[in-house]
Length: 371
Image (cartoon, rainbow, N blue to C red; front, side, top):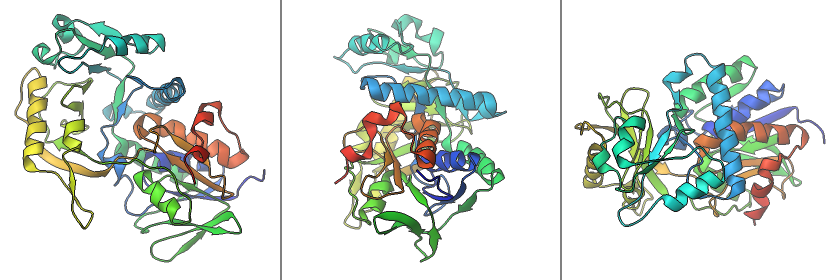
């Protein structure tokens, strides 16, 4: 396999950032292009919980655990990263009438750091949480979990990328690979420009399936409308990530909170023009549920909402690697992009450069989802 001289990476989120930076770091001339601004898509509105908690396949668990390990390496390498990357654990408990004991046993069987915490001991691991809000059976504390502010990381990676000689192009409009004689040869921007390439990586989050459809490659896609609510800064004392029955919460870099939930996402409506909407009372209830969980029961004020699609492949598991029908074309598309963010770039870069397929990615090849 000939090493490509010039690669174009499409997508301004964490997968695009890590893929472009890894390629440039390894000496490949790389252009990183995005429709709008860097981090203005799913990465800019993510809860960004770093974890492999809960029920999932062993193969998906392995890739997520390795993803967390990459974040720990990053934290050790980047001075000041503790302001936007934390490993203070995650706390979760079951809905009324249900139990997390089976989940706890599953996590322990996978050797995932998981401790059972009785309700009267919650303050020992999460002093900012009101024990009365926790299920009577107790909760699971995952000490390996953390959170990250992806826009901050993307800024760090951009600086590295440019030091290694990479070129960033923002506000390029919709970017689509050009295919000639069964091979990706360039990327055409929304403005009509053409960026020649020996290989193309599509890492455009929930837009990835649509970009590929433009060249008659279909990837099974289950990306739903979603949103994350961000509060104004306050004195909340929360350090752990909370995944509770009615709200998931993490701290933000500016001293506020980020939160989402399954029920609130299901309340999103889409009008005839394709614009998504969420009712004010849904936001009010989400903030109220967060207030109930926190020990100080603070008054939470909304700062802004990040609304858009959440990237999820059709079977819910990662889609990474070469597109079989188009030589020189690669895709990185997955839910839990935060957890896999740095790892995904390293895996893609290795495959693009010399065809290396890491055993971690074997179960997640695009061919299982393409038509």
